[in-house]
Amino acid sequence: MQQNNSLFSGQWAIILGGSSGFGYAAVQKLAQHGMNIAVLYRETAAIERTLKENLKTIAEANNVVIEPYNVNALDEAARTGFIEAFAANKKNSVKLLLHSIARGNLKPLTGTDALSISDIQLTTYAMGTSLLDWTRDLLANDAFNDDARIIGLTSEGEDKYWEGYAAVSVAKSSLKSLTTYMAVELAKHGLKTNLIQAGVTATPSLKRIPDSETLLKQAGIRNPLGRMTEPADVANVVYLLCTDEAAWINGTVIHVDGGEHCR
Image (cartoon, rainbow, N blue to C red; front, side, top):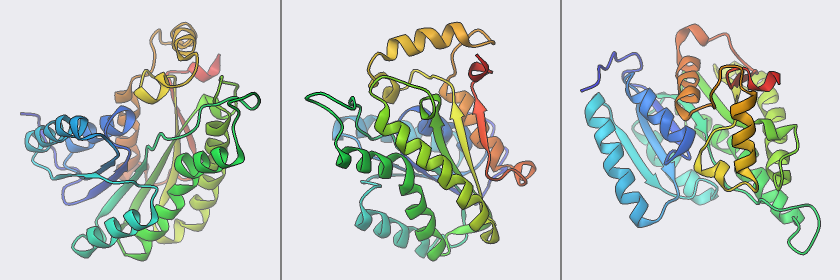
């Protein structure tokens, strides 16, 4: 059994997109430190069965509560329904809202399968501005505690060319701007809003990007520390941003890549 130091005992994280990659790694890390977690995801019944078993194992090993929700986090009715039910008996308990949704269109700008404006709008909402809807609804339902953290995830593709990544790049650029404004305007509620820019990581979402093998190969060469970023590296920083010592970090983009962005 893992040692649970109960640093976040009685507090909750809401993780949007927690079935794999960075979101799932954050579940594992936060549970080790006593945080209860609501994990939202969209998966098939077969995948969900295994996921629920794994989440149950993590919860029991760390003596925490992990609640799985197979819902569409981008649907307004699903979002409001979840938040109202959650906040009914967990007022002022949310320490962390982690936005780890990876859902978007990976198409070129021109050609027979080019991005449409609708593609860009849907991707921007899914991977960017939906964070604001979730934050405002949680605030309206008094779900956040008085020192809560909002964390979004971005990538180097936000400001560098990656094949087929245009819509996601637009979404992440919007998320970066949104982080700045949320950091200022929501500070009065005790919220600290930050963005993590992870290095190239072999997650399921990255592997859907055209020519992702080249990105992975180049990352291994570029990284000063001699290896690629792993989901656990990002989860470690999610954890650090939730600690009392990180209370003065607000409105920042934190590179979690071993210095990969320097090359």
